[in-house]
Length: 293
Image 1 (cartoon, rainbow, N blue to C red):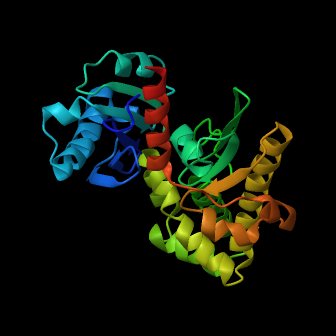
Image 2 (cartoon, rainbow, N blue to C red; image 1 turned 180 degrees about the vertical axis):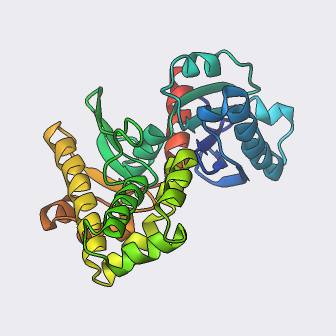
């Protein structure tokens, strides 16, 4: 690898959006780009289209011509890469770069969080998962998809709230401010909730999480019960990763900050702040790919 002439592109392709950053060998940012969702759930072609739009904007901002583009080493973190056949299909597609490598968006985030060193992360967002790597071993706990997994996630918070709201409507549970507000969204009609359920995605359930957190922070008994249960699930993910040998664990995701005060003191003390973001992790991947070459 010629450190004077190589460039490094990192892309974080997630379920809600895609970010790209182009740097030189010294880490100076040359260009950045954004696009819409990039996940294999949308199909390989759609995911690659979003990725290309983001990195294309970064390359354009850098003012690169084809002569510079062929000296780029690219690292791509992509949501849903674990789906059968996805990685093989991605690697088979032609690209304009010196090298390219793909990992899941979670692995990209873990690389960034620990500067490419051994470690693990727990992501608490729409879904939840614990993952990492130690001495060449991959670590994983949870993250098998909502509703069968993803405990402690935003989607899980929303599901639990809807369940309790319906029970409260029937008189099977105490009616609290949270549960009353939630039933108002369904015009007080359980059948409206059923109709919503029939088409609701994990993202739709997760959209209820801020309401749950707000009421929990205000002391609502049902909200506190739901959030405390979610925090216990995140506690468990963190502890299991340490038990599996992770030397350090970082909590990431949209629910990380709201949930952290609810975590057990021993878990909070052991959490490590992230060194960098998922795009930083993708750039680390790009540099590793260049070294292999």
